[in-house]
Image (cartoon, rainbow, N blue to C red; front, top):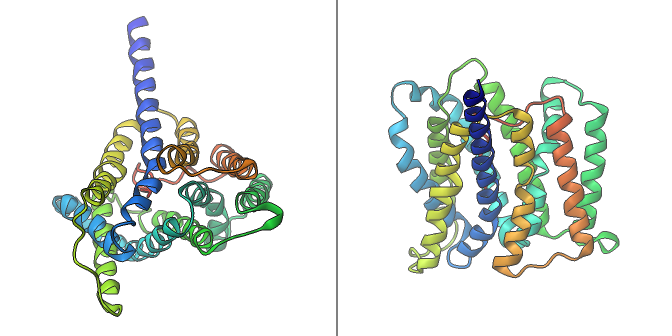
Length: 305
């Protein structure tokens, strides 16, 4: 009995460590994406990133994986809107602001669910929403409110992420959809949509960048922020509780701000840090006490960055 408990405890710590690594990687993705955008425009960068992801996951679209095509196409269109807003937002605001603002999708989700299925959120979620609004106010300047276009795009991306969570639950509720196959279809839609938009614009897309820094950043986002985190989640989510998953998920924006400071030299003032902490508390409160389960698709949390 003692040996069994020891093995269980080790598995629990291993699962927590892996999920914490996911939060760190997702937190770093905002700074990495911002660096990649120094070398190539948003639509071209997204086409390359998600094109590579689609090619690597293409073998998943066999057998049961074909079930992902029908829900994956409309969900991919929503994901296209998310990443266009999110990536342009990262380019136009600080990576630390982006990390905190995108986490508001957790607070928005119960209200989107309310609009879609008429399930009223609990009073606690209204309090979390008020707390997060106070956090956004402080994060974007407080009394000298300076919500720039990048901040606005991140808020729109957070709202679209909430829509994506609710739509995914609805479209995959009665199907056993393999999560990697669903990611493959969504990635294909994002890549092709960005290519079409990029070449439709005057001047089209420039030649592929030659900078090793660009390709290193892109491969990191494909290999670690998408594929590795999907694998880790599949492995870890069956070994730990939803509550522990929620708390570890909620640490992502904090890592995003810390990494942006260490890597890009960004500095949040006192008001910014207080605002970020309020957003973090609102997110953790929603995940811990909200009626909705933590956003998950087939046992996998939505990709970031």
